[in-house]
Length: 478
Image (cartoon, rainbow, N blue to C red; front, side, top):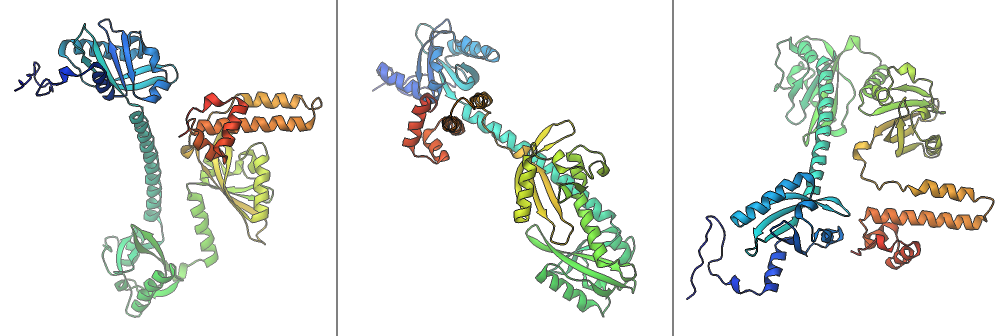
């Protein structure tokens, strides 16, 4: 019967029977290497004497260059103390806890690896088992970016809610929010409370129908029914019970929290403005409070008016400073975008999600998205545009190729000295090569994915890679 092995250190995991002592050296090496992405044998002087790389990506990053170097010399300055502590603790206690170390590689610069150091038991050697931690690091970075984006969205939502809540509370027009199913009041602004029952009237939870006298109750019920069916009603004359006065009452249906609610407006009959003027005033108020920039121009893109968000976007203090100016002064790239916008508006009557840039007073630029519409015939020939910055949603793009400008200059210098056919061929080759390099960078040098992005077969892509000498730029096929 085999004797049980006893642990010399409290809390240290050991096998019950000492069977592993008879394992062959190749088997022991395989077990050690399988514990992580990299396993290193380090002597008493801290020099890496042997290494087993399981992670192919780490091998491509140049991890083999660590051999025959001090482990502390292969890490960043802030990680050198961790390395010394791990080697010391491993020799004293037999093993250490997992520690994160920034390894320096030839291709990636700095690489996060999580290490566990174990005493090898021979000649003061230590085995360091490491796990590539870049996937966790990338996920943490994406999580932080997503959290920051959510916080910015929440801040904008909170600001918008505050503005609309302020408008609801300070409006001089009586406004009531009603549940169209139960016909009970959900909320009423101060103007409605004063109009219906005085300053201390508590309307929340009360029946909307009971606000009106007996002759108008059927009209009030019908108003909510029509609003549920058509989403908006016309104005109806109804008499309130509290003041015995006739009011014009209208209702609009809106959805919130997966339910429907009605916004009911009450206007005294003797103070009602013409419907057209009231509608225009409401429209102007909404446009002024829009969070997105809105601007109206004539058919030559001369600015007629702009809301506060547009003035803030172009860093202008008053509307009078932009009226009469050309929109292309603040929007578009060197006149090109102006022509494209006008052509689309004149041909189709609208343009949607047009990518361009917004320029400030000092020529600073920000990426923007523009949607525009032409006014109907007979409206005086004007256009309306909404402008939204898209810098926050911009995805990572490959860096611009530094040789583009130089190559174009070289080609233009050949005009008059080389035939046009040869110039076109060279230009085509240049564009083709840049597109292939961009696709390879976008797909992390995956040739199969790059071929799909470019709409080419793999064989065609391989042929072009050899043609342009880019074979070493695409080592992966899957």
